Length: 323
Image (cartoon, rainbow, N blue to C red):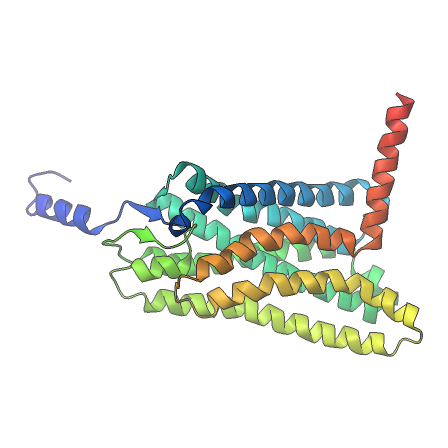
């Protein structure tokens, strides 16, 4: 645009005054000296979390005992979890140890989009896993015929598509908001409610989109999951003998615990996006604590996974002795 264009300088000055170029992630600044302790706790949790999910993913790939749709979904969930925590935690660690709280406008919205996409994908994948268990317990004779490789592969891919699509909807409405300042986000990551609260334009459409997307990606899946488990429990209750009931439910208990952990704190934050002080603490639970616990839930409560780990360790021992 030529500088001789009428009003060019005034428009440019107004743009520079009203458009925020970067945000400041306040994270846990109020904790002061405790930030160093929090850094080490989050770092250890991140390392254990990633190592645990990588272990599960590798085990499912190499152990014949785990070559089934259920474990394929679990390994896909582990990949999602690794990506999910990596989007948020490294920036939090940098914030805590170096005090670098700055994040550019583009980086902020990119983080928000990817973080929400992966979170919504996890919700849909948990729904797929509940459907898989329902089908396995209520239609065991038809299960293998229905859950062919191309079918369960498609079911594993669909949540990614759903998550990306719904996250795009919230991104479109939120990125259009005007940010005139202040630019301090009372959170450790860029998320919908904190950004909506900073906007100097009307965020009502963005908040409405957030509520609709939360209903579609969290409330709707959890209602279907509950329906699946009502069906599963009804079937298990008809099984004669305590051993048979325990064996049938053991394949579902891990998924049920993980589902409860994943949906619990997330629903509190997103079903009513207020951007309150407590949101970042709830976010810390489903961003750090829940992904950390999930690998242990799947291993400690699952006999097949424990057997696969034992077999893998024994193979390595035999190989090392052979060398």
